[in-house]
Length: 115
Image (tube, rainbow, N blue to C red; front, top):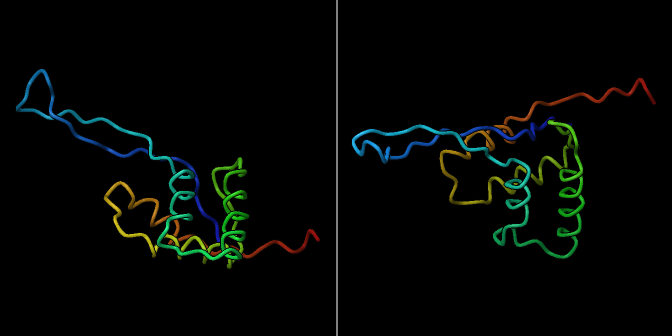
């Protein structure tokens, strides 16, 4: 299993200060992690067939329904997410944290003592 952090994070931006055009103002925007993941999972470049679409949607529903800031994914689910990240072309600097969270997701050994 893999543990993926779904919490939104802040990205720093800079803009020209309207009061002083020679200076820049820094501000922060919230990066929507879940929404971005869901969009990546259904990009056309994935070329999902009908069976893959159903499996992808089941994973999407699991991610959407997660109320915690982290989610535990089965290896096959994590591989689906990883494939979506590796398929997409056009990332920018703001996406670095998201990509790292997925590609470097911590391996977790499930606790089977409770069963």
